[in-house]
Image 1 (cartoon, rainbow, N blue to C red):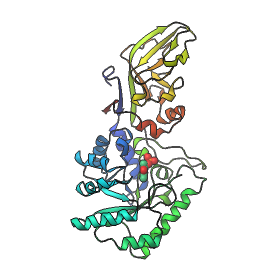
Image 2: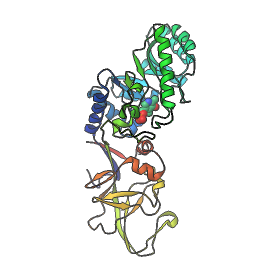
Image 3: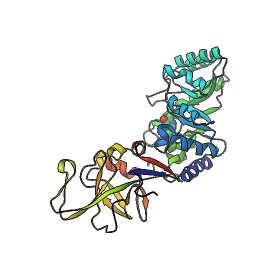
Image 4: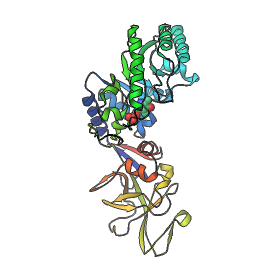
Length: 376
Ligand SMILES: *Cc1c(COP(=O)(O)O)cnc(C)c1O
């Protein structure tokens, strides 16, 4: 699309995102609520556009990391419930009320503060209490009796959800997930015995959904990467994902120049690559400032006219050089595909991550705002 009109752009298929969301819903069934995760600008796909699409596809909940992300969605007119998962700053408490955001509360002290604020306003602020069941990050470590006492003391806030998050969902052999599920269920049983049954009970993100680990679903799931078409591989099991999703994003960049260089020519910063023979080099208008990892220097590849073209030399801030020797048809103004499919060739975020020594999430989130988003 628009070859030559942008230096670098991503094409995002909203249809794919809707299909992926639908696939998750069908897998978990009607008794499990799906709260798609649209944090980090919807993993680089554009939080507002993606949230509008998900809302119109029937999502009743969306999950973000910060109050700021939640406020941006409200300002764009998103009316679904919004769960703020990664805590809030003192200065942001007020906005939880003003913008009808639902906080995940990670400490019993915060619970008391928000309860007081809710009482002062006469507003029944719903909240989800997050347990640290063994991840060692956010969430309360308080035991069942302490949590029960705190919840019994709540006057105006409304205990709507109990949640936790897994540290090692991808490591089936570790036993950590089983222990986390047990700790969660112990807390839930204690609260229920005292007559406190939260409307939502949730633990899992993409992996427990995709690998059908039902005991980790509760009655709400929080898929992020699956919505964008990715499922990470797991270890320690022969299980395969039962969820079918497809990547929604393709990333392209325009060739500024195509040039023939003589044997022995050094290419780019540091002379990291020396042409072993006369070569044709394509100079792409994309670099690490756009999120194309510097670690792909001399080791990544892109797709040009349906064929793989290796990255040669250093990826620089704004430019990347690739070997297009033998790809006769390519001209300045044509594009290369950095992520996506062209004819028989394809490159996904997991391949880039492997070559760059990172994870697919970081590749997607790393595509910078300089890269134009185009919605299909
Ligand atoms: C990011 C996040 C998710 C989504 O994770 P995916 O692996 O992308 O599905 C779910 N829950 C919490 C608490 C998160 O931070």
